[in-house]
Amino acid sequence: MRMQQSFSSTIRRAFVVGTLALASAGHADAVTFDFNQFLSGGGGGPIQSKEGQTARGAGAHVCVDVTEARETSGNRVIFYIWSAIPQPKSRLTTIAFDTGRHTDLFRDVSVVVQPRGVKAQVTPGQSHAFLRSLTPDFTIRFSRLERPAPGQLAAGLAPGNSIMLAATLGPGKTFANVISALTEGLNPATASSGLRLGVIVAYLLGGPPPGVGSIHDDGGFVIQSGSRWCRRS
Image (cartoon, one colour):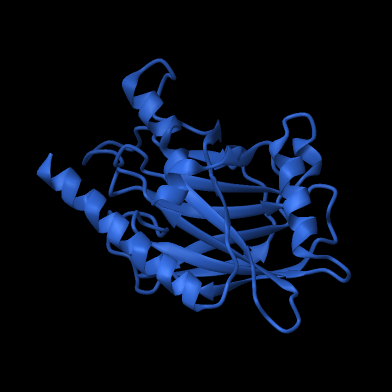
């Protein structure tokens, strides 16, 4: 119990540091979401099991602030993403942007602040079975800064860590257009045509023990609503 409390305290301290860094970078108030909708993957086992519920609920602990950058040109939107999944071995391995019908919303996406210990790289959108309802336009993947040791966890964003991404707006587009596209993406009736963000997370239950290939504790998640929990963090 004390170890879990200590880990939670460490995460919250990291949130404070990250929030202060975000504010000092000169950004407006954020609209905050969490990735609370499980899409596909192993998901920790049957949904009715304790493990399945824990794994499928982990996306509620992955948060994103969406802010308008205060720049002279006013043509960038900042996506500040962090993980507070209680399982310390969990790793967010992929971030995906699906703009739906708004294909001219962003010209590009770039990494502004790299997470600790890994390197994030933006690539053209790549579909994935765990994000089965998304057709990504941009995909962010993680790699190690050093050669991995045998049996080491996959590269990705660990709990308590964060990444800052910047999306350059297309010609004539504004922050209001982004919020409108996000709202469209959150509505189940129009989700496929709106802007949606998805993530893939591995080791939702800590990964397999030695000698076991997999415990199927991975999955894909998408933002579904605004988050009061993330704002409190």
